[in-house]
Image 1 (cartoon, rainbow, N blue to C red):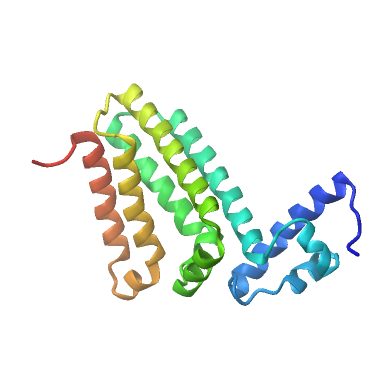
Image 2: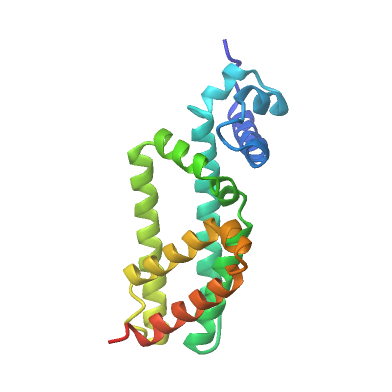
Length: 204
């Protein structure tokens, strides 16, 4: 039987599983990672893993959710601390999001199309729906801040979400764009589009 852990041990082990799990996922991807190897690094029996996570995919999504919440907190804090006019602040906000997107180890794993398809098969619809709900809520908060501080009626939540989805799509294809020598130019164009669309609205 798996060992019974105290609450303090549970917190420590869960944190270690997430840390060591990310190391393995970064090295091998989710599909090739082995629960036994992650448990060996943490020093627990393989059977004990399932007291914390239902599967390695569940572990990966817990890591992804944790990092997503961290990024959302940091992005909102960045926006609240910014000074300057709307175009300058929006440009820096785009740069901040681009930096986080390009540097995030979770997104580096899912840049592999096979990994994305694998996770989509394994992750429950309820989990995906909850992630979408959090994203919508965050965009509503960003929109409310931009509209109240800079009087930007065009910075509605849906437009923000659409623009950021484009940026994320390009970032996930970074290697392909870089192979064609167009990645930085494409991101620069998206930055200009992001600022102009939120400040000036759609072109008639």
